[in-house]
Image (cartoon, rainbow, N blue to C red; front, side, top):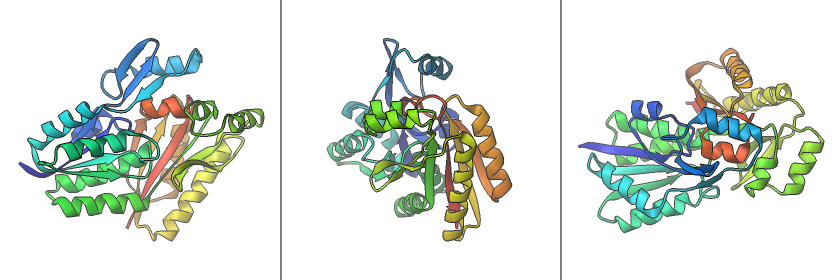
Length: 284
């Protein structure tokens, strides 16, 4: 039996292959569109989902795992490890955090820690990957929790959007802000700041957004006295700009590891088609 097993929600920007490589347990979030409900990251066809988003014939809906789903996932994982660490999306984004805590409290005979990564999308993935890497090396409970905390502090994630309407529909921003952004042809760069989704820049083109990313990453890399970065490039059916983002990152920074991943359908529901983003962990 291994000392620690890391789990996270499939809302994270993570593929089943990557989860298997790092031995990360995935608890499925759910996405409903075109009259059917799917388990994100498990039985959802992303090409079909992207076509649905692009067609603009309706908004998908999302839901977090139920209490029973969390308990079953934790019980199954506990058969392989003494301690379970669940890396949750920011508690401000999803009730999945409180549901996971409730499941852990009801399974009080098990050693379960719920970590609020205080981010979404690739930020959640990066914290889970770093924690799982430590767990895979045989580290104990406190060491893995310490790695998760270090990754949380030294990781940032931001995304640029084609439109703000999906954020408005999901209640992340005011609808008037979405309308104004559309009228001004803004491609906002959003990030998690002070417990909420915040537009940290309002460029008018993807090229301007990419320039903003470069300067933001340079600033944080310098501030944190980085040695290299681990990076996730993600997109919602916008491989062109994701590729340009990858080219920028590789040309500007020493890369320890870089992953190209599609954004989870749960997150894509809120950021909309054409979104792309960068997550960076500044390696000390």
